[in-house]
Image 1 (cartoon, rainbow, N blue to C red):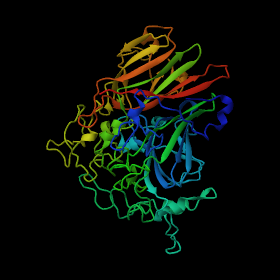
Image 2 (image 1 turned 180 degrees about the vertical axis):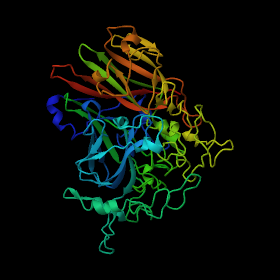
Image 3 (image 1 turned 120 degrees about the horizontal axis):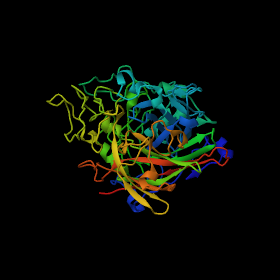
Image 4 (image 1 turned 90 degrees about the vertical axis):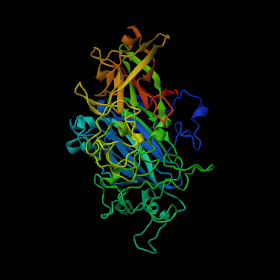
Length: 567
C-alpha cells in the first residue's frame, strides 16, 4: 500500500508507486509454468498490463508509468477504454528503446464539458506524435453511427481503464537495430531509429512514417474475408521477413518485458496513491516457452499493425494469443484471472471523514456483451472472429440468453449471427442493452458477505443503495465503482457512476464504521469446456481516504484486491 502526505505531493506525478497484491490461494498455485495459464505473472512483469481504472473527476489526475526491462526495443500499444461498455477512446503506440521508461498523465479538459486530455513530457517516440498540449479522449466510438444506447457526450470519458500491450519486438541482435543508411539511404532499422542517444531518440519522424498503412492493403467489408495485408495494413515498421531479419518489429519473444504502475494525484485536497497494473506474461506465446531465458517459441504471431483506421483496433487482449482478429483463445486467457469473489477493506466513517471506493473491473467483458455485429468499434463484431472470415451479418445478435452454438464461418440459416465459442455471452449473463430503468448496461448480479472489525457479519443479497428502495445489487458496467459513502462528493474518487453500498444497513449496525467485505458473483459459472473456474474475469483495487474539512492530515491509501476461486 501507499500513502502520501500533502507536503510530498509535488513529486507524485513523476513516480507511479507500486503495491503487492494479496492472493487468497497458495503461492505455488500462482507460479506460472509452460502449459499452465492459471494466475497473474509471478514476476510482476508481463506482455499485457491492465490498469483497472482511471479518472479525472474531483480534481484527480491519473498517471501511468511503464518500463522496458529487456535489452530489446519494444512496440507497446496504449489503449484507453471508457468505463461503461469498454469502447476505445484513445489509441497510440509507444516505440521504446532498450531499458526505456515511459510515462504520461490524464487531466480534466480546460472547460466544463470538455474531454479529458492525455499528456506526456517523455521524449520516447510515439505514433502518432503526442503534441505538447496533449491529446483529448474521443467519444467517436460510442456516438453517431457507433452509438450503443449509452451516453454519447464527453461525460462518459471521465472514467475508464487502460490496456498496455507489447505488440512488437526488435531484438538486440536483429537487423532492425542496424544502420542501413550506408547501403540504402534512409533505410535504417526501427530499433536504430528509436534508440536514445544522449537522452533523445535518433529520428522519431522517420520511425512514425514507417507506421502508416500501405495504401494498397485495403480493409475487408462485411461478408468478406481477410486476404493479403488486410489484417495489419502492411506498415513499414512491421517485419515481414522473419524474426531476426528485416528492419521492422518482429514477433513478441520476451516472456514478460514490461512493468507498469498507476498513480492518482489530487493537488486540490493533498491526496495521492498508487498500485500495480495487472501483469499477464506469455500472452502472445502460442507455443511452449523455452525452459531458460523465458523466451516465447518461434511460432508466436506478429501482432504489429498500422496506426491507421481500422487496423489500429488490433491487436486486443482477446486476439493476442492466436493472432490478429482471431479471438478463439479468449477463454484460456480469461482463466488466468477468473475469480469467484473479491475481498478487501471498507470504511464509512462520517465523524472522521474516512471513506472507501471499490474499483471492480471486468477487462474482457466487452468481448462477450458488446455484440454489435456491423460496428467495427464494437468489441464483439463481425471482423473479430477466427482471423480469416468477416461474418456476413443479417442482424445483431440481441439475445439475452447464453449462446452455446459452435464456431461460425457464415451467417446462420435463421438470419442471425453466432459468435466464436470463446466470445459467446458466457460467462456473463446479459448483453449490453438499455434496461427497463432506461440505463444502458450489462448487469452482473452480486451478493456480499460483509464484516465489521469486531467480527460482526452479515450475508446480503440485495443491500440498500442510496437513495434507498429495492434496487438489486448489480454491477452495470465494464469498470464499476462501489462507494462506501452516502454522497458522491464525500467518496474518495467522486465517481459520477458509482453505486452506494450501505454497510451499516447491511450489517444492521449503525455504529459499524470499518471492516472488510467478500464480494461474490452470483448466477454465473465457468465457461463450459474452456474455463473450469466458477466466477468472472476481474481485477481492481480499493481507494481509502480521509479528507475532513479544516484538517491538514489528509491522506489516501490504495490497496489491491484479494481474490478467491472455486471449482
